[in-house]
Amino acid sequence: MRPFCHCAAALAFTVIAWTPALAADASETYTQNEIYSAATDFFGTTTKGLAEVVEKVFQEQGEPNAYITGEEVAGAVGVGLRYGNGTLHRKGADGQKVYWQGPSIGFDLGANAAKVFTLVYRLGDTDELFQRFPGVEGTVYIVAGFGVNYQQSGEVILAPIRTGVGLRAGANVGYLHYGRKHSWIPF
Image (cartoon, rainbow, N blue to C red; front, side, top):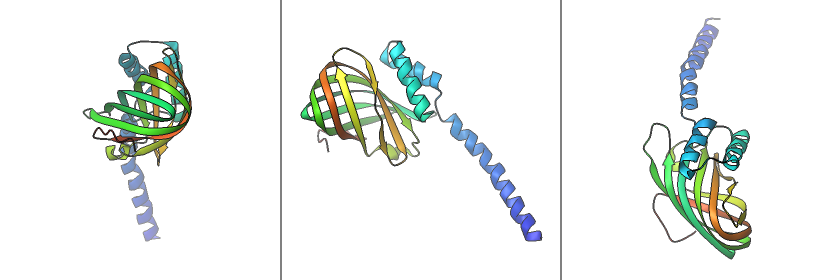
């Protein structure tokens, strides 16, 4: 009977010891209002479209624990390329420069330039960001508007919110490779 008491006491101590860690994780995420405010500052505009996109992503994914602000250029004639750069933001940390590039293939034609605000979910160590993230995208850029798609690798999910200008339409499959250094090689 005594060993059982020791096990119960150890279990109770473990549960109590983990409770502050759970609270700390919650303080490392961003609320919907924080993200909407940061996105509005970044894009320089407040629109119903941006509010709807942010609300949709929060309904589907919850609170992100990081975000990336940046810009990119892309073009395609069946086969496409995308290049971008930005800054990774995490609570309690300085911004870190991030670059991305990648190929795509599909029914896709045209070129565009976009500002990108990417919500990052379940990012543990920052190094988990620096890898390839596959995704599927449908795009129509004729005039400025907001769009979002999801990319996932392991547990980490990225939700890039884009607004851009250009003349591009289509759908494609590809990936983006995120890194610490700029590269012209899209693979």
